[in-house]
Length: 281
Ligand code: NDP
Image (cartoon, rainbow, N blue to C red):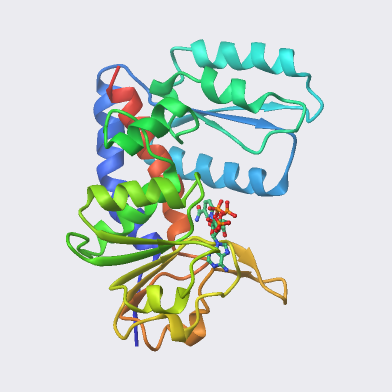
């Protein structure tokens, strides 16, 4: 039976460390604060927002919520965003995306102060991830994968790692973080010719494809570590990952579930980045 890599274990493991850092800042008169910017009322955004606020407040961070109607015009939003950006009491900013089509997302992306860009929205921070420069912030989900592997003492150095997915949100930045950890990396995508073989050779297999249960037992080598980043809905309407958990679990050495895996760690990373931003002042 595979070792279950539960996200909440990682979250609880990070909590004391993060709370102590928040406490230290408060002694210096600084309350670390995350600003959450949302346009409209998408249920996914609202649910993530609730989770993020609960996680941050549980650690001792403050949260400021900025919600705007879905039909706010572009210039008004950019003006409001400028004010949030300039507010010295807000150390980190999370902006829900995609934004409505009439909002100039490119301008928002690159008007955020990189020092507050705790989920790596700006090109500046993305470039830093690619350059291996730790003064920026990686997107929270890729860093959550690294936190999870560290927490469970799963070494990356020299290991054969196969990553399925090459998006700019997850796959590519995660690839850079894995290389920084000295993994020997294979990146797969929809044009990969023999996905099964590329996956099966991996000591650590990471699925970030957004395709429900696409990773089957035949993709997984005996005893491999399997990290499932996917969040999908299956044919029965249930939340599931990119990995066919029932089929893969008996073969894997360790496996992260969905729900209850990487996704739960993401908001802790958001809190960690906000603390780092407040400490850097
Ligand atoms: P995208 O759709 O932007 O990218 C998916 C990537 O996977 C692409 O590179 C695509 O290849 C590749 N891919 C898709 N299907 C296959 C396939 N059948 N075989 C091989 N490669 C495939 O998705 P995201 O990167 O934004 O998200 C990936 C998953 O992670 C989603 O399920 C998403 O919900 C989840 N997610 C989870 C988060 C969390 O907090 N846990 C946060 C963000 C995302 P190609 O480039 O060739 O098209």
